[in-house]
Amino acid sequence: MNIVHSNTRQDIDIVPTPRIDTLVDAFINSLDVKMNSKLLYRRTLKQFFKWVSDSNLVLSGVDRTHVLQYKNYLLADGKSSLTVGSYLTSVSRFYEWTEAKKYYPNVAKGIKSPKRKQQFKKQPLTPSQATALLTYVESTHDLRNLAIINLLLRTGLRTIEIVRADIQDITYKAGQRVLLVHGKGRDEKDGFVILTDKAFKSIEAYLNSRVGAKGIEPLFTSTSNNNNGKRLTTRTISQIAKESLKATGLNDKSYTAHSLRHTTAVNILRAGGSLEMVQYTLRHANPSTTQIYTATIKEERRLENNGETLLDNLY
Image 1 (cartoon, rainbow, N blue to C red):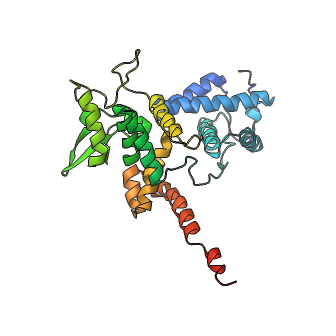
Image 2 (image 1 turned 120 degrees about the vertical axis):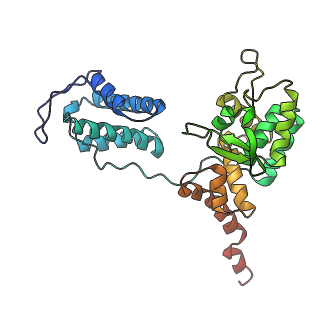
Image 3 (image 1 turned 135 degrees about the vertical axis):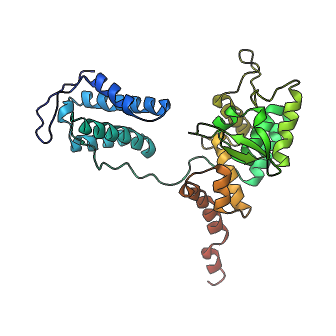
C-alpha cells in the first residue's frame, strides 16, 4: 500500500515510524481480544488506509477533519450506522495505540459513531403466522426441519447457537428440561433455554429417527451427500427457515431465521410476559437491548386503542 510517511508533525514528540504493514501487525498483536475481533480490526483498518491512499493523503498528515470526512464517506457509501461505528472504533483504537507509541497523535479522539435507531429490521411473526409456519413444516414430514423451526420459535435461539448444540446438552436444572447454550461471543456453554414439552416433542421425534445417535454428536446433522452426519452450518439453518417462511407467504427480506428470535421476544410480551422475562429468555446482557421489542407492542396497542376513532362518535 503506497502511503507516504512523514515525521514532520510538531504537536507531539514523534519517533521514526515503521512501515504501515509492520505498524498494523504490531497494533493487532497488542490487542487482548479474540482472533475474530483481530481479523475485524485488520479488515476495517485496511479499508481506512485504502481511503487515505485513494484520497492522496499523507498518513502522517491525516487530522481530525480527515477522519470526519472518512466517516461521511462510509455513510454516503450506504453502510449502516452499526458498520460505520465498527470501522470508526478500529480507527480510534489504532490512533490511541500510535499516540501511546509516539508514532502519530490520536486524531480520532472524540469522533462519535453515528447514532443507531434502536429497532430491529427483521419482522416478528404473529401467533397465527407462527402457527401456520409450524403447520407447513409439519406437513413436509421432515422431522429435523420441524424440530429446528419449532426450537427457534419457542426459545429464540440464534442459528449459531443451534449449530453448536450437542445431544448431550439436553439436561435438567431444578427439575426442568433445558438445553445448554454456547452463546454468541461466549467461550463455553454457560447459558440455557428451557425446553417445554412442546419444544422437546419434535426434537425427541427427530432424535428417535437417528438410530444409535450418541450424546457427543451434534443435535442437528446434515443429510447431504458431502456432509452426511456432520454438524449443520448456520447457512443451512437460515435456508431452512427462509424456504419455510416463503412457503407460508412470508416472502420478504425482512423475514429470515432471525425473525424467529424476534418472534419469541415479541410474543412473550403479547402473552403478558415482562421485559425481564424476555431478557432472560434471549440471554441479553444489557436490558436496554431488550427494550427495542416494546416498539412493536406499543404500535399494536396504539392501533387498537386509538383516540381518533372515539372522535367519530362525537362529530
